[in-house]
Amino acid sequence: MTGMVLLDTTVWAEHLVRRDLAIAHLVERDALLHHPFVAAEIALIAGSRGGPVCDALAYLRTLTVLPDDTMLAFAAAHALAGGGLGFVGTHLLASTAHAGARLWSRDPALAAQAERLGLGYQPD
Image 1 (cartoon, helix red, strand yellow):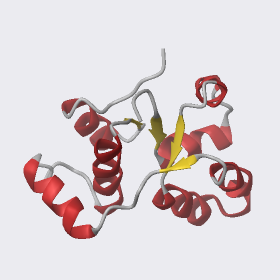
Image 2 (image 1 turned 30 degrees about the vertical axis):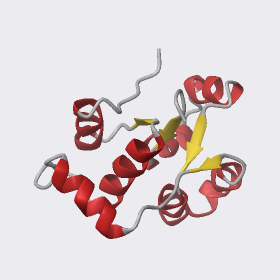
Image 3 (image 1 turned 90 degrees about the horizontal axis):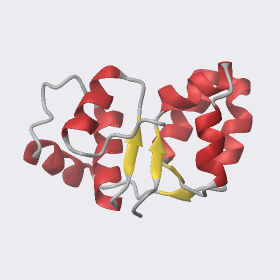
């Protein structure tokens, strides 16, 4: 899935507050990916305000939710433990790597680890 980008919850949450034209550009290029954990976080965090985003995510290509043991093996192989990431962020990184995609995050720890692994994405 080269050229494809997964947006984490921080990017979508900001988009709910203030429309981000970089996201619109990715939509136009059909370059967005979806991860079920992101949709769940948006639904829990944003409530009814997140409905339109959650609905839109259903139309995007979905990344595989990797088994927890695969995610933990990825974390061990890439020295992610103690790097400020939690369960969901580590899953997002592992799924992004597995798909050969990139990850756009505004979370400082997740963005830093994505960059370190060559998986980071920042819009032009």
